Image (cartoon, rainbow, N blue to C red):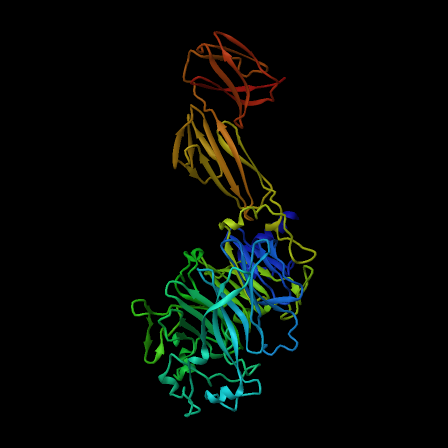
Length: 631
């Protein structure tokens, strides 16, 4: 029965998301895991409705945790720095009486050490402005932050806002601030960009920013969006990323169904350098190029661990609300904007920012099975593969470009409280804004593999791949070659032999051929008269690995003047014709020395009590098979 269950678990991991439905054991935590086919690393999550950031291994065990104050909540992102520090956002749990509040609201940005000590902290949350959604670390240690900026109704009307869409709240415009740590536990604003300075509108001819929207594609139409859940929040930026190669900032503006690029350099006038996703937002009536729909997590694919991704140098986007005949679904979109680095300009064709179509677009085979109306993230990885978080479902999946789900994790929280394994979560109970995989080779992760860690969920039921490794391997020989004895583990097995010179091959066994060892059906041969050492590594289908060693002295009747008798023997051998001082050793078939002595003239050798079987005598250049037979 145990073997049947192991085989079923293997089938689940190989068939990915479809097969996961066959495995009814896990509903939260790790639900799919193919250890032979994942991008090795640790996953950072910062779920809603609770204060802590968690670093997870593939089995869903918390290998590290940054514990937040009980009365704080994500605001909404966290980033792991190469030093092991955590750059994080947070807000008070209570939002009662907050003058500016909408989904994604933040308040405080801070940097904490690996040991959770606060290095610096900066808060913006009052009636004039409030941090929200996302931040972007910069190479110089500074941080870019998205910030709502309150514009009262009088100022909004003076700027040409449509009075039909205004409420008593006025408008919340956007600004981006750059924070520099001041060395005294806080930070200061050293750069600022205000959207309010880069608007165009065609409602009020008397306003200074009046113009034809289609003739001003580098400016933002103040009156394009229709009022959302919070009418004042007319842009709702939800992600920001920084590209140090050209000093550009990338933001997501979901109410416009667009991503925007802003030049951070001191030579820029601050207008948009590039925008993409919805030309209707700047007055071009071309619905065929309306590609984005309330998108999240727009990022340049430029991290070192993404070097093996086909999307390197492009922009990845989680496209949340793609319309379809059966309703909204989500998609993953990659776009490659044509950029002239000498002119510091992006291409415009026929009044529309290029390209006309995405570089790549992905939807699940069953599109409605992959959908999140908000939140969510998309991280291309080497492989090629990607990590995706369906934010409203709290479901994180690693998927290959071939469409195979090789790892999946469901945040095991109900309103921020851990639930038992097997719980069917309610919709939006475990919202997780984003998930990020960091490669295991980073020095900050040294020692995490051996950590005794626990999962978040209650009553855990580990997948077979997460159980302690039971694989055991030994090398044996019956005189015709090396054979493996494999105990435990889950077939199929990956076998790799290696000799003293570093030569490797894969084969179930290594046959001997007279005085040679032939490896891998004759791939290479090695003379064994002077002894032959081999190491073998076996990896099972669930990623368990075990190693073993073997030693073979070889067998050759190379000197007819050297005599050994009786053969078979029991407890004594007679040896004659060997050089004086020659060292004789007796090996068992596993290559272990079971007896040895020095020879002088004719020698009577009293053997220890040995089990019946085949042994090898090695003395000088002579190798002889000796059969031991006990009465």
